[in-house]
Length: 125
Image 1 (spheres, rainbow, N blue to C red):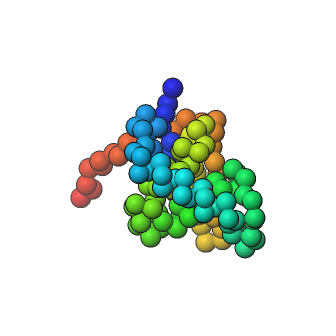
Image 2 (image 1 turned 180 degrees about the vertical axis):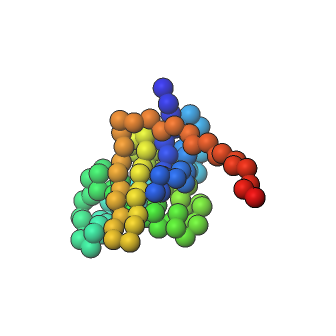
Image 3 (image 1 turned 45 degrees about the vertical axis):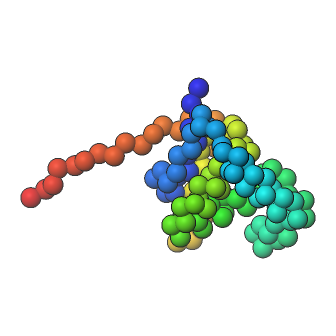
């Protein structure tokens, strides 16, 4: 079974999470604090949601994850990725597509992530 979860932005892997590596006590506590904060309500698409469900929390976390990735905030990106991987154990990929008009986020549960491989191309003269 593939225990990898990946976050892709415009089809390029940004983060890979290996569920075989257990979270530290500190990380587990941090995720619990994130849940407690969201228990007080979240803003999603300009709307306040008093008691967010799992899907709404995932949308909120993913939107914040995109922001963290774009701002090169590696520690926040790692924490948000860990949250998604831990709270949605069947999640295999987070596919974020961004263009001038809109951002689309797909949570993929039915398609294993396959590691991307960098290819060195010879220089053209």
